[in-house]
Length: 101
Image (cartoon, rainbow, N blue to C red):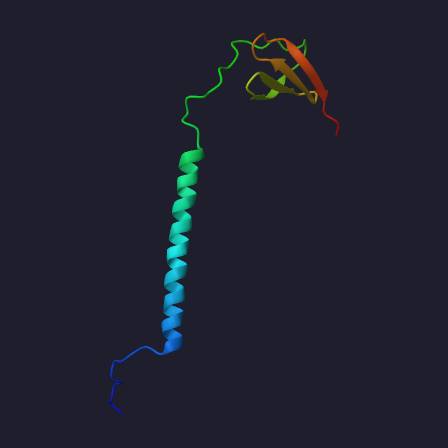
C-alpha cells in the first residue's frame, strides 16, 4: 500500500494540455503587451491643449450648465435646454440648438 509510482513521462494527452496552456499564456502576455504599446503610441503627448476663452458673453438671463470645446469652436449648454455654439477665434455665436425632451 505504501508504494509510490515511479516518476516517468507524462501521458500524451497531458503533454498536449500543458503545451496548449503554455501557448495560451504566451499569447495572452503578447496581446497585453500589444495593447499597452498601442495605448502608449496613440495617446497624445499632452502639448495639444486648446486655450480656454477669457470670457464668454451669454445671452441675457441665460445660465451655463456645461461647457465643451473643439478645435475651432466651443459650446455652452444652458439651463433652458439650449446649446450655444461659439467661434473659438472671435467668440461670436455661430449656432443655437434647442434641445427637445
